[in-house]
Length: 371
Image 1: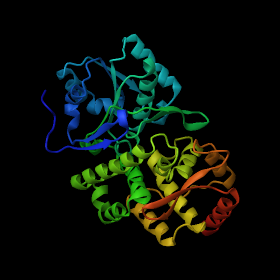
Image 2: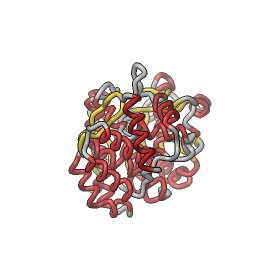
Image 3: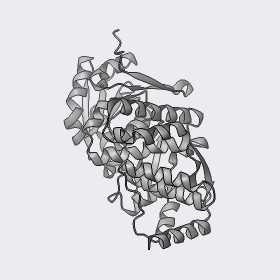
Image 4: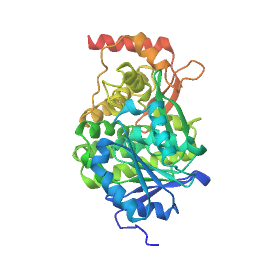
């Protein structure tokens, strides 16, 4: 069997025993998807789950690659964005799989960003009690974060990602060329997750970002390739140590406690995920400083990098009760306590329960300084 191993691709292994798989970073790799599936030994039908925007950009390339490799393809389109992350759309996809007589040997391909990956993985986990799926991530957030690690699921009207399963893909294929077709706002939003990795795990990587952020914003290819690979390495090592988020993996939620709260308060319309995470990181660092966990220098360095990436950094007008209430609706709440990832230094974080009084006093100070 001919291998699609060209000189320009790299692999990062996610080590999870029998559930281990590769993340392949391969510019132009979409054209080789059929070959990659063959290498994995798959022979069944392929269901491509995508949205109309991604379908118009890459649907043909992917379908042709699969057909050339002898696969029968069936494309299922769902709406773009968070509004498709519901049980209603899960049901729609399942109806299609049933109608097309998908079997245990069939395979699903998630072609798109985080929403597509989350919903496809969830469908794969429940259809016939589990069929294989492959992540083909086309946005920056999905490439550096959501496509790796097997977190799948959909939103509930009362909270984000409340319904889901841990279910690992068989392969993650990252064609970095797809990032060049992202709308600018989506591209910039993804940079928040990149900054996050430097903050939680790698101060050298953070310093690299500080020195090359302008090239990264401009999508300079070698910087882009290095960044995607490094983020995947960090995520893979965290997931390998804590697949089901009982401890260490929670550090990946940095910026997300306040971030998710802002998303839900804005009914998922005001901010896209990365923008909310950027604002969340800026304010979780500020909170950490006010609690005496980190120096002001940490807050300043991170805020500068977030701003240079073109991300929003200011908290919208809101009152404390709404913010705290939204934070309590997060799935990381345990025994009624909000656990938040807080930086101690660049590259080092801790996960601590938040005390409502001290957060309220920090929020009061923030309001004062803004007045």
